[in-house]
Length: 210
Length: 373
Image (tube, rainbow over all chains, first blue to last red; front, top):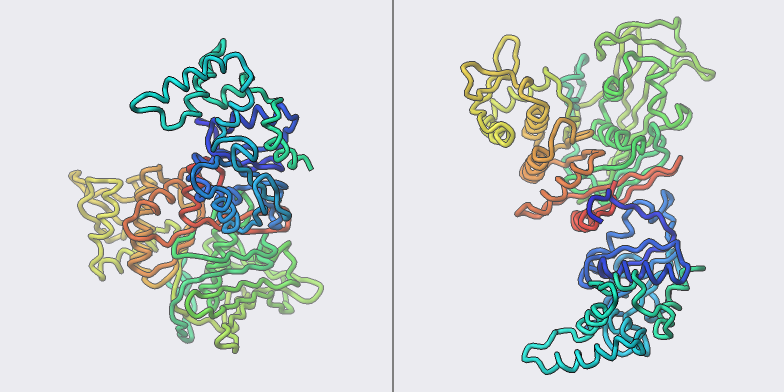
């Protein structure tokens, strides 16, 4: 986004994600779903939600001069990580003056309706977007190469901190045109966006249609 | 600079002095003033920067705060209008203070103080008089101007009535400014503390301020500030006559400061004002004018430091994102905790709203490249 002027809120739905590459992933997924009226805003990492979420609604366009929310839905997607991700985001939402939903994957009532989705979602093993992406391609021929690679690195003295990220990189490296990040891979169509593994996330995002 | 203590405005002696003590404004509410229908700004801090689109009411908000500070100085509205470009006193003066020029709805400005919660209230109404003639005359308050009374259906508007009261003292102080015998007159005016001033580069005021600084032996403080822009400056002298401020920048002769550039003048006028307005209020419209980014940072450093040290509440406005970044960077960079906020004034036709940014929220928004203006 370097070189662009400051951004205002111009769309009725705002999706706050962790980083720039998450933006790429969701741009691809939303386009695939035919949802166009969503402004994706990366906050700069999962630790930044507490700083950025209170600032985001201050941005011109979020509320009108009457104080009425122009934004219908504020969706927040975060990796599960190793802490209480949902409670953490819900508390930040509350502190920002909004009503959080009761559970991950749902939106609250109110203006705007606030939704929280913790990756990779229910029924998918793992703690992050990468786990979800890998699940979408578990039957892809390239995964036959990724599996032994993952086995091999597990035996290293100093194995990668995130095996899921390593496997994603290996999968992306196995494509005809290499992609250096999962979001870029999504833009290139490397993940199977029709996979049932994405049903939970798609169901969450679909709520922004109404 | 416009002063509330009468130094610039006073063609008539003040008839009494009333002091209400000193507290910062926490909240200001403005109704029916110029373009503003109804606007409240809550959570005001020591240093306040107002931003927003053109015609959103930033300058009107500054003016309304200024009027509230000088609520017992009825000549103030007349003088403020001269800086809005009104060359003479006429209907175009008396009605301009009222929203949609509708003089039947009074202007109301309220301010709530931080500690006591005490509320100050200023109501401005038109003053009517049946004139014998409709004439134009020179105004003593306005160089090269004229005064003209104007007839209306309910009488002749020939002035304003200012009614000031506080929640702790409900008996109002009423003062008036009007035209009589071809002159701008006032009655009921009182000097009121604390004082406040608009930063405007005016030669006479510069002289007066510098003289006061000399008396207080604070010239070194001003020079120290100016060195941020002109490292070579070693001294400031008021050369008399004609009383023009000169600086020693190492040249064979002293140089008039107004030849040293806009940034220099801005720092000088702001510095002189703050050093002479302890326990008061300073208002600066379009603070970025004449200053590059580096100078803006230095000006904010000085404002943050002096506002705290001298117990001054500052209200400024800007259009410039560069200036906002300088404000944010310096507020974050100060060793002491700067009590500074930015407020965006939003306007949608007749609706107004102030959006408050703490310095932390402002820094986060700028970091994310989210618009704050």
